[in-house]
Length: 483
Image (tube, rainbow, N blue to C red):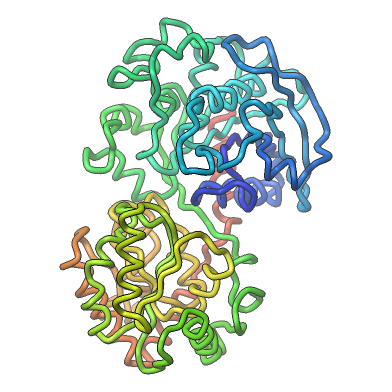
């Protein structure tokens, strides 16, 4: 199965969220399963530094629009996965991340930057491709790849089957409709049946409109997208396309995230020697200046500091958390107001609450290993990875029962304990008054060491690896490629 996997991110070089992790892990899993994938991605500075000798493959031109000159280069990862990099320095050789400059502002020309990514993806998936390798399926990811199915539609001719993957519907890539011509789209696309969306040009809407199939990152999220609450203005279109919508839960890299072999944590441990986890908790407390209180559970939270992630709910419960009693550590970056509020709480409750603003891969691993309980009270969560990392590390999560969190975390109660299926704690409403009882249940069970270790082992024995996920995708690709 030949798959062109188009993406704006790939970990560890260019990553703003889970898409970066997926874009490295899923193609590698497809390769390991016998498929023949290529990852199409802009040649960002981090990739230039990592792969300075990428081999030129072809010039990229002749597809309309007002794009800068570009070429296609190939780099090969250690596992044999091939990266096809779009080398266009005026668009991609800049300081910042994939979407924003180093001051946190969106690049003003993001429409053209990712228009080129979509344009090249459509070209390489067509009969006009300059490359002898031709994909059977184009797997485009999120709004930066959303115009690829539209280009294929308006270009006509033979193309690979178009699959549009939605990792977060809230990010839609909406721009001025006057960009149609510079992007190389015909004026007939200026319509509700085209790429127009509430008077704008929407990359994501275009992908949802014209892709042969739509996939999202958990079964529950696939259903939630059909509702007005979670549909972000696109629920009607998604209901119309619902027969072509599939939810496939993401996996995690169980080699990178493995408490038995993780070189970033203080002490290795596993389901059979849970007592060694305590050394990680002691080390985390010492690293962050928390009081050494072994009879008090340590709550951990890692992720974007935004309302979507429910960080504000946790902040509003700071006094309740300290009085449970419990300690709290938070790592992440995001909304400046939330960052400031968390810093103030860390000062007010010094020794009880620790906050580090920014991203630190080592500390993320040490929190997963050192925390007793992990918090993910998200208002919505397409899939989520940290709850799976946490279960794999024997750190039962407390989550809101939405999206991938509902698909992966089984609430502890009498029935699930008897069935041996409980892995954490869930709550229903995006409200601090609903989160607090779940926290109290978790802290109360933590005091019951035999029951708590039973819960830890349940989570650690779940298989969240990528191999079964890759098989699901290959089944989907096979259905699309023959139609």
